[in-house]
Length: 270
Image (cartoon, rainbow, N blue to C red; front, top):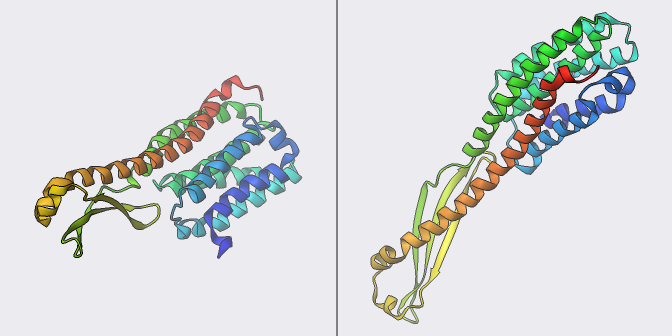
């Protein structure tokens, strides 16, 4: 099953490019190896750090195409005079980018960024055979950079929506029969974590030590302490939400850095 994981498929492309395609492509490639590593790190953030539930079927469908594109790029690196192979890479990388951009998910956005990277590598290589290709490279780099900027906002939205609102409500009063009074109150609230695909329950509790509490009924205790317990649960929920949003900002920063470099294509000597 491990060979069907989408992160292995996508990250594998970065590793293979960095290790196998040193030749003229990587050596002259305007993004340099560090950019590939940055995007690889972005993918790893999505998969491991956030425990994202991955849509394996999505990447399984295109796995053969991604591997075919990788093989074509390897073949071209081994024989850079074979421009017909480069033509195939051009068509394949462009089509994959367009397909992936139709999926407004983290999987689709990450895959589209990789397809865009491979497409720009292809265009850069084509410019070695056609000096006029640099104009097309710069134009496409700007177009794809605009897409990345817009998608980075979408990433933040996906991360924010991954933490659902507090929905469940449970109030519990623990009775101490030996002391003939209520000893503790508990408040449970829940929210759905769409990345984990499961409910997360938040617990707040209050030990009853005030003397007057022993004379209060459960309903009266609830009225007295429940607002405080609810606020404690909401505070915990907010901490979780902000932490998840911070993860999204990390991904967004990688995307914006990449977009900035792509938009600066006309300033980079090639």
